[in-house]
Image (tube, rainbow, N blue to C red; front, top):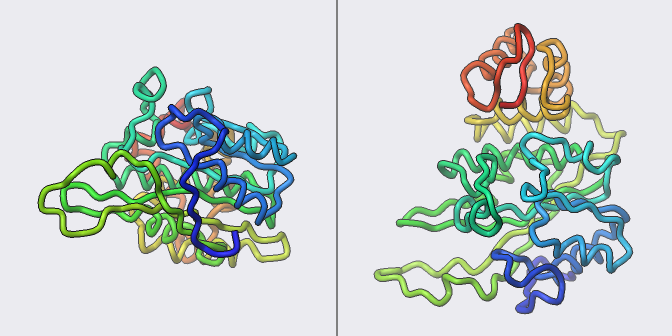
Length: 297
């Protein structure tokens, strides 16, 4: 991987060729050779391509997925792996371009990112997934995602641009362009289409800072970036704080977790605890257990 452009027409021998949306195993080979991780986790492993490549290269690998019982919106990746990893890379759905639960695998699931009501909900949930991945890597480790854009009915959603805007700008390390091959849309004709077909994806890589780098400074950059996409930010922060506490916690413990994960969101806000409570009450992502105790809905 000597340049920022990757193209592998063949998917290779790994995973299942019948699994829609598969990424070529040679792409993972490129990334592993470049970053040299000793431990790796794919929290949306699909048919297992990434893990098979990692294991073949002598990398300790963890493959998690909604279809096998791991819910990235409700469960901590770090708890599932039992230790921080060097690289946590996901390949999520591109909103509802391919619907997975109940289609690629049996059983519809409300937390399937390909079953979001609209792109805004998808980005809210993808942001929480990335925060979960960030928490799962060593200080100095890498986390990232493979993501494409979506054009539909004259509209264009650049999910990679939204992801970059929502995550810590100081931690972004690389934006790679991956050529898409053998996609179904390439065989279709679209009447009146003036703009070129989308035939690329992005690989976004962030690096969690060393402990020597002030956490406040890092999350300050994240908060400034998130202000550009303020809708949904508090939901993602509060929900990930709950997930990091096991999915259920008292308000006092939740306040502590929010203060740890997003201190700059609190700076200058005397009433930030009220904002946390408001977020809990007005969003269906959360449910009360009893007075003063909340859980992921």
